[in-house]
Image (cartoon, rainbow, N blue to C red):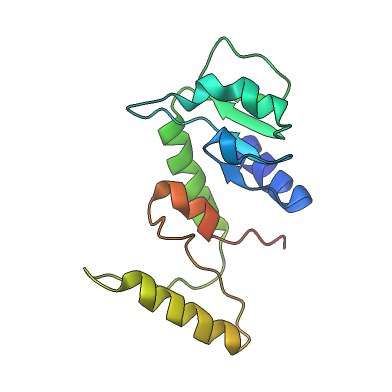
Amino acid sequence: MQKLFDKILSIKNKYKSNIVFDTRYLKKNDIFIGIKSLKNDGSLFFQDAINKKASLVIINNPNAYHQNIFQIVNINKFILNFCKFLLSQYKGRIIAITGSVGKTTIKENIFNILKKNNFLVSKSYKNFNNKLGLQFSIPVIKQ
């Protein structure tokens, strides 16, 4: 799995690619991960990802064949392991905000204050504060 993680980071650095879970938002060279939900199975949309020139397609669909497709038995476990990998590579500091009201506002304010004071900062994408959003939040900086 380490090779796949390295490949993802390499693609993200080379093409400034995004990780996308919905092929409607996929752009050329993005990385598509097909997630199964109660309503849909993202792995069934692999051909849309290939047609849109995804640089990497990570799915659980044994009927899908293409040079850019990686078959993963358990997508949720893969995402969890990828997040652990990202956190292990991350050398920055993390500010966690908890509470029941105002977390996003506080997050945005802290981000803007630090950025205006010339700190290299990133923040969670929208309010994706879960395992799907984590890979958007951790900056991929090539050392």
